Length: 68
Length: 205
Image (cartoon, rainbow over the protein chains, first blue to last red):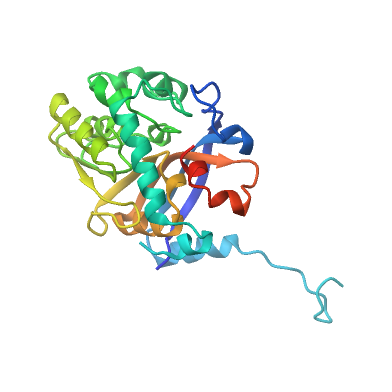
């Protein structure tokens, strides 16, 4: 089974580690605190619609060869 | 829990969990010690928690708060709703949620650190909240029935899980259809080298 979430959104990001009492690795990786939300799809149809909207189509020429 | 992530990273999941448990047992027992993250009321201020949310929450719960975001900024739990708090720690977010959902709602907090569970249960008793309970368990194997939750909240916990896909599948299982996921966590802007992912002290620090 795979998780079936839709409407994913990061709503907020901020440096929440700066000035902490001990030095950590957060700054090395540009670590930020974030808030994010998503919603469990109501049904398979809603999930399929959301997944279809995520798919990318690569243009293919009339000869069927990529990149032409 | 699936070992896939642990195997992929050549990471001993049990060793990682024990290191995390030790770290957060210290946050429970000695919150003023000073960690590589902020804690307590000053952290709640950084994360933009409203003052009124903290009114009536026992200080023992607030002092060991160690989140990285603010799940309530994404929407407040409504009266009568069921809220699942993953990695509930000393219980601050669970208790805030318990007051928001009121007597007709319920909150379950799940944590793997006994010292935190004890602290959260004590805080719930002290706050007089009987609509919240704390269960020991892992996010990758949640002790909650299918479709129980209207809202899943979590704060600074998903980043500590080696098998994030398994944890998200469990959140999906625990949520009712259309249920909300409201998370505080972290985002890294620079890629973490594969070798670094195997260093336990980087996961906890």
